[in-house]
Length: 178
Ligand code: SF4
Image (cartoon, helix red, strand yellow):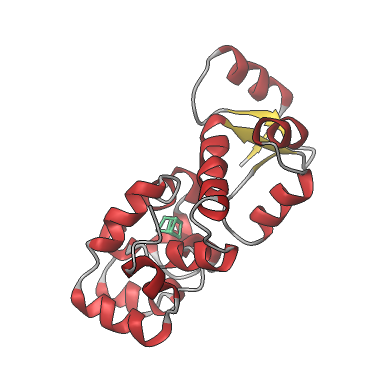
């Protein structure tokens, strides 16, 4: 979704966590990181950023909180960017969105776990029509503690599938993610 200046001005007067109001420079200052770092997180699929009609990135308070969570995971919990992507990839979006078995069996996010489901193309499923930034799966991944609870609840079948392929599972099982 692209935003124009009027939208942003309205957003600034009606404070809402999801309203995009901060430029990338302001967001970087708030987080104490470089603009390049924010671009890297976006290109790696850790976050989806809104853009203006002029293609300028704009950040909401929810985006800032998500980025704080990412920074904490990287700096304090020593999870790499690749590890964060795999954690996102282990969220059982199919259980949250309740897609059909036909849809999940055709879905690249069900078969892979190298990134959040929002990083895959969804051409023939319910997700093709949805806005990932507003989706509960994406929002859930903004909350580090909540991710851990979700991963704990993944069924044994999912664990067995993941154990075959996921080195990050050992990190999670060892309690490295808080
Ligand atoms: S709408 Fe996006 S975030 Fe939600 S389950 Fe589908 S791909 Fe994932």
